[in-house]
Length: 151
Image 1 (tube, one colour):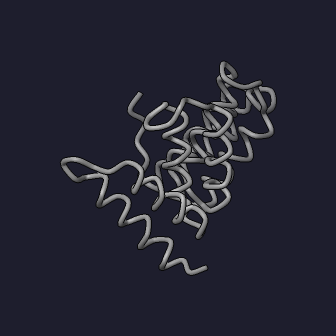
Image 2: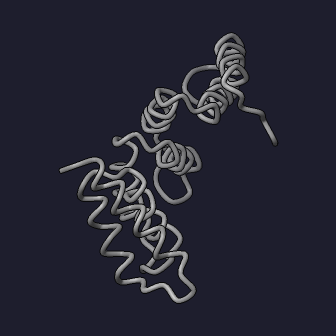
Image 3: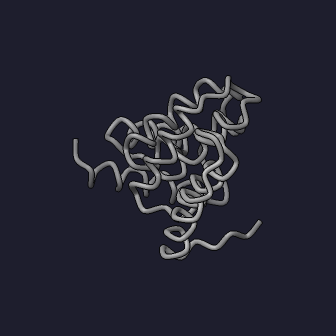
């Protein structure tokens, strides 16, 4: 399995999706092939299609399955989406361990958004009682990376 082949296959799927009359079956086949070859972007895309019911029947369970694979493959967007789902707890049971794990995976990729979300989580005591010190350190790092809170 070649990472280059996975990236090329995913790029082809993106290219076809921009056509005036895209052939969804062909795009899906390419996404599934790229995902099988290890493309975190393709796994994230498939998960999103399931989550939003775009081109597939809506399935949170399938979305999470693909996003978990994408997160392990280093896809920051998947990490952030999973953390949000487990934090809200409206579609799945709240799970602090999965929230923290996914934010930390995104932080490991250098995501300013993840530093911010982790700081917010510590500030509001999601993992432990409120921690102003952890909040301040994480916000400082988020700003160093260039993240700006737009809320």
